[in-house]
Amino acid sequence: MRLEHVELRMVNVPLVSPFRTSFGTDTRHEVLLVHVITDVGEGWAECVAMDRPAYSSEYFNGAIDVIRSFFLPDLFSLGNDLTAEGVAPALKWAKGHRMAKASLETAVLDAQLRGAGVSLASYLGAVKDRVPAGVSVGIMDSLAELETAVGGYLDEGYLRIKLKIEPGWDIEPVRMVRETFGPEMLLQVDANTAYTRTDGAHLAQLDEFDLLLIEQPLDEEDIVGHAILATQVHTPICLDESIVSSSIAVDAIELGATTIINIKPGRVGGYLEGVRIHDVCAERAIPVWCGGMLETGIGRAANVALAALPNFLLPGDTSASSRYFAEDLTAPFVLEDGYVRVPTGPGIGVDPIPEVLEKFTLSTETISR
Ligand code: OSB
Ligand code: MG
Image 1 (cartoon, rainbow, N blue to C red):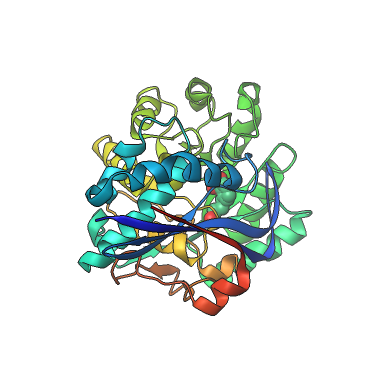
Image 2 (cartoon, rainbow, N blue to C red; image 1 turned 120 degrees about the vertical axis):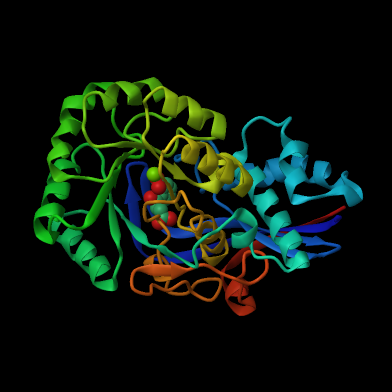
């Protein structure tokens, strides 16, 4: 196939409520959409880089710059030899920028699969037609507010609750949720790197609450620290930010730093690398689950397809659209008995709704070959 034009479109979609993590508060989802026009058709992807380099070193203006300055010239120069599988090799010379690379690979893959009439789910190796939905619950101002939020999500049918934690908002919120909602609910926590190696004894206080896992307690570069922490706490450790490739995943597993892995395709350079992480984990009996970055329906559709692979053994942050958006860019993903349906149409299987897309668009830039 041949890449003809690429539209870089910034959108700003309001969130239904502020989302607070240990690295800040978001009230809107401002994000880059990548729309490719090829000789076999069009494709879409959502670049998960945030507005600021707080989750990782990437941020959307940086992604736009590296795409415009380096990545698109490389992909245009492939001429008729462009394939989705060839995007990562063509961009491999460039260090990092995995979210930017992932967005190009995904948009090209969407176009390629639409052209072939194949769904992303079946291309990736999905074995389910629906996936269990968890929900990520932000840090709140009070325990009462948290109780209301968690109760609401459970009433909606979410099958697993993830609480964001940080020093000062950890043991007591977890205790309250466990005591209020009972021992059966699937419960886990995510620290987004907010702790240090000296916090082992503190985090061991979470052991009594029978959590599924604690996600990324320490700095993303401190894989050895996670291995040390794993000897101090009984709660399984799950890495998110640290796992940027399948080879790092293997290292972290072999070091004893992680026994469960959160796969976010954007963080690791794309869905193809996401599948490789899925596979190396499956070979080592390490369960995985699909993370999220507050995606609109465009990114959510692709995540849900990935989450349908066999070693996704825990519910993901694959919530319904209504978790974040009153109005999504695509037909909304909805909860059905706690599950979200895997799209079956060609490519990512969803399309942006033109009027909604226009309404939330901040800017567009088209780059041609
Ligand atoms: O660490 O999983 C995370 C959102 C933004 C950045 C990092 C994370 C998150 C979430 C939300 O937890 C997951 C989602 O529902 O999309
Ligand atoms: Mg996380």
